[in-house]
Image (cartoon, rainbow, N blue to C red; front, side, top):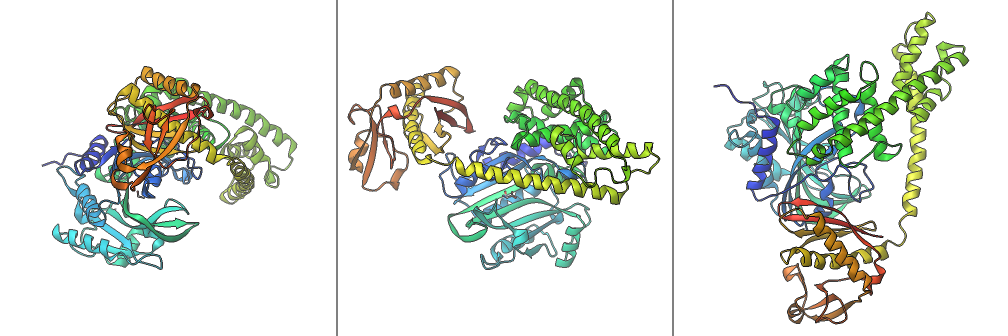
Length: 615
Ligand code: SER
């Protein structure tokens, strides 16, 4: 019987259904643009939006979570076009916040990967795993290894399968600070021949030769890092798993390269029309897909930070076309094909198709002008310089050209080639090419160091007065909570709250999207109370008495015998809002300024999230 190949859509829904059936709340992907994390420009892993919860904050949707998260990594941008590298990818993940640990996490990973009825139907005989070998921070992870050996035995998977590796391979942390821990990684044999187990040395060689590929990583986050050092244990034993969606689709569909999966085939057919080689058709497809998702998440091309990365992606895409030009019609066709793949998955790409097209076309047109001015400037340079053999090798000309008009160094090199040929010289050879690129990169590095120093400076300067601002947001949160109950009913109750100096974020139970009118009414109520200059006051009471006042509270048994009740109004009986709360708060609402909701969205089924600002 012929085996039916799972489509990427089926793989997506099998992943989510599997964890939903095992009690996980399904989270929607967070935006590519991280909130309040100045250390990264884009989310680079599924766990990034969950860092506060892995550190101990209570998650509004519970202790079992799963998601497919949009991620961007541009570190390997030059490798894009080979068989695996992408600048945008999705990461499937499941999380336990102090709930299940190694046994369930590993069993479920194995089950989902190999079960043919509801899983990905991968061949268990082609599976290999690594575990942490231990160091001064944490012991050798025999527990995970034993769980794996047991599973392999139970499923008749024979031979050596489990290898121990050092922290460099099997310790995961999102950076120098935050949650971290040992991990166990799953690898799949791409050749289909390595089905009988391997010795450690054979395995290492196979890995080097890229005959096995990592498909899932289960991190056991029970440690915490500070300034690059493991400093202790977290309160909870957490699980953080990550599995690259595109990679899994590739192996499940039995392909050797990601562009042959159903995720890409339609798009590649389009980009093939405007490029003249395989690498270029892939680069255009990859970069435009990433641009689609960035623009949908609110990024626009510019000369700094995220906008700059987007600008580079679009320009590189255009640069990879045959003519160094892309028409509106071509952009429309490619973008529509990309978006079609995500219909029903990411609504914000579907609803913003026009905006996405116009941003890409706008940037492509700017690039075309750049190419024209850049070409003119380089021709002028050729006129000035009399020795084409050493052209622009001992000055900053190529970097300046790039810096001032975004003219890519590759294009400069092509022009130099043309000039050389017209003068009867050979084209640039590898050695010379290396010299040009070294010179260029050296200048680039100098420039980046300067701008990084600038950014740090800016960041330090902006931190004053944070405490006061946060106090105002805290009071606004109480006010918002009550206003939501006024407008939507008392089924609204707090599921989580997070405050920064820029905004408040409030999660609450409610089954559907709020209408514009409801949002407006909530804002009006909050602003009306502020205009009334109502006082915010505190009383300390016995817990039982406090409960009798009807004050809201969410943390069950976690309160002591005596509690603080904060209320808005002249006395607690007639107060507009009453909550058990540790404070701090402002003493009068007049300190808050004007309140505005900036966003209302779903966190998971039955839980909504509002972001709001005061100005
Ligand atoms: N954080 C881990 C990773 O990105 C597992 O999710 O691989």
